[in-house]
Amino acid sequence: VSRVFKVTLGVMTAIGGFVDIGNIVTSGITGARYGTSLVWAVVLGTAGMTLYGEMAGRVSAVGGRATMQIVRERLGARVGLISAISSLILNLLTIAAEIGGVSLTLELLTGVSYIVFVPIVGFAAWLTIWRMSFSAIENVFGVLGLALVVFVVAIVHLHPDVSELWHGTVHPFVPKGEAHPTYFFYAVSLFGSCLVPYQVLFFSSGGREERWTTESIGEMRLNALVGFPLGGLLSIAIMVAAVPVLEPLKIEVSNLGQVVLPVAQALGFIGVAFALFGFLVATFAAAAESTLANGYLVAQYFGWSWGKWHKPVDAGRFHLVCGACLVAATGFILTTINPITVTILSVVLGAVAVPITYLPILVVANDAGYMGRFVNGRISNGLGVFFLVLMVVVSLVTLPLLFFTKAGQ
Amino acid sequence: MNPYDGNSTRKCLRRQIRVALAIACVAISASGCFVAPATSVGDYRNKAANSAEAMVGFIASASRAAQLDLQHRSGFALTDDVVTDAEGDAGSVVNAFDSRQPPNEASSRLKDEIDDPLDAASSGLTDLRIAVRRGDVSAIRSALVELAAPDRKLERLESTLS
Image (cartoon, rainbow over all chains, first blue to last red; front, side):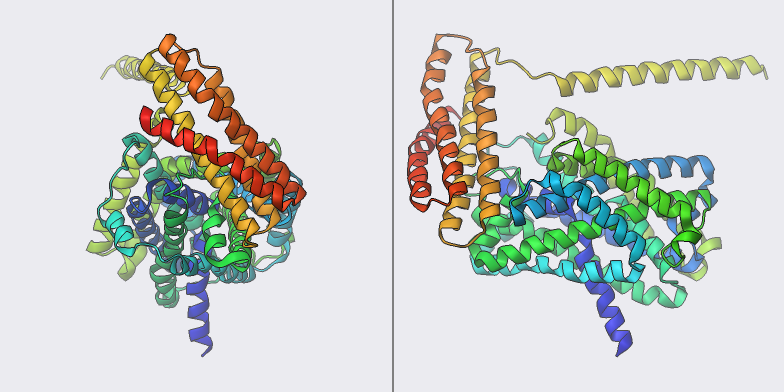
């Protein structure tokens, strides 16, 4: 029974932990603007995340090492440094976006300006990382993040035209009056929001925190292959809920509160409370996880002692990096830069940087000498190469799209 | 093998990379930083249509949030946030459109035609925000009625111009 409970908990954690501020914002914007015609981008992004998450988890379980340790060992210090620096900067932007997201949610709950909450949220994230155990961070927030299922319930209550939603999903089109570059800019944003590098770093380092071995691979696979896709469905639910309420009114989402309006219409005050609670938990968990991911990657690169299984005094530099990242990200949001703009930038730049993070995972998962009988099979390799090529294409077109469309305007 | 050949090739390669980076920086700056002025009649017309469309969206967003509040389906903080943001965005759209120079007489007439509903919508959103913050239900209803007229005009203008 305890094993079933553990597996269920792992899957639920993966579902609830998949969604962060990037998914919430980009899904809300695109649902209101393009209906379901960009669902394919979430499906592709989630499939890529699932594939590479499973690969990173397998590498971690077989090698007994996390992603960045293996990157440095197998690809050398220089390539490792490029990967580490790009992921570090991107994660910093993500931490800032998540802290902004938590603060904006608190503003929606209390009516007090988000800026007041920014330092409090930064401190709370540091305290969580300092005091809570790894499994508590992962499980408590992951499971509570399931409050976002309220968007699925809202869709049922809104009685949308299912055939129209399905048609938009399977026959994607650029709506009349919308420019193609803007459509693809948002496709790239959705793709990037699903494939954020911190998730794979956190997942593989989490494998070490939980002492995965080759015997844990089945459980890990279940978490990745079931949990991540179901998490992707939550993203799609946020998008679909916007379609019957916001799209007909031509409401362009530029505010976190607008994403909640469909739930308010469908379920009233209770629904709003669930949705905001879900936002709060999902973004706070992502703030803690992306901060930990930065601590992991720096410590793993330099070979320092790392992980939550150590007492803070025994992994001082790891905790110092986490604290410094939180201070930097909190300071960045305190400049009063719009957190929604930071979120869009983080997911778009994430799309630029993904190949640098994901290529080493594919290379190592393919190394028969390292992986033994757990080396990538033909299907994993084929799909891995397909997604890597896709990531490279996306990373090449992202910056031109960002500038050409003036960030999707 | 002459070692100088390798050095000169590397130097040449570095120079080419520097030139490519400089070109990329200029191209990125050029594409991202300039706000194109409305230089042609068609361009001005597009800006007018876009402003009308954006304002219709702001009115819809604020109105829907206020209606849900009146039905006790959402909280004060959520309504206030959505309405305040719509008001701020509406002000930006009015300012941005006002800063455009109409290129000819016909465009000036178009500006006169669209200015009134844009200003009325912006002012209506301010009234709605004040009413929401005061929790004054009848003032919220009045502000919603006040917003209906500019909303209709802007929708009509947008469909005519697009």
